[in-house]
Amino acid sequence: MTESPADSAVLPPTEVPPPPVQLHDLDFLLGQHKCVGETPADGAAPTVMSMYGEPTLGGHYYNVDVSWPGTMSGRWTFGWNPLDQEFNIYYIGDSGTQGTATSAGWQDGEFTVTGSYTVVEAGGHRTVRDVFRKVGDGHFVIRSSVHSQDDDSWIPFDVFDCHRV
Image (tube, rainbow, N blue to C red; front, side, top):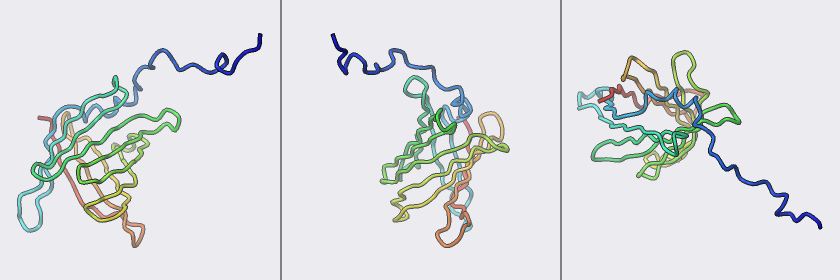
C-alpha cells in the first residue's frame, strides 16, 4: 500500500507553547494609566490620554488600549517574534490610523518602537518612533516623534507622563 499525501502531512501542534518570557519586559504597560501631555506654549490645558493594558491570547500578546477622551482611541498590540528576536507591535485607531512597528527591546533604559504608519490625521504615511522610559514603579514617560520627510531628523510631537491609577 502506498502512502497518501495526507498520511505524510505535518500535523499542527496539539499544545500551545507557553507565553514568551520576553513579554514580561512590558509588564509596566499592564493595568490602568493616566498619561498627561506637556502643557502647550499657549498655556492651554495639556492633553490627557488614558491607557489600559492587559494580556490576550493566553498571555502571548499584550493589548494596550489608548484613548483621548472626546476625540479618538486606538490599540497597540505587543508581541514577541521568536524568529527575529524582536518585539512586533501593531497599532489600529478609530481614526483609520494603522501601522506596524518593531523594537529590539530595552536598550540603555529605553524601549524604542519604530514603524511605518498610515496617519489619517496627517493625510499620509509616516515613520513614527515611540520611546518608553520607566521613571519608577507605576510611572513611565512616552516620547513620540515622526521622521522628517525632508532630512534624516526626528520631529518631536508628543510627550506623555504616565502614572498607574
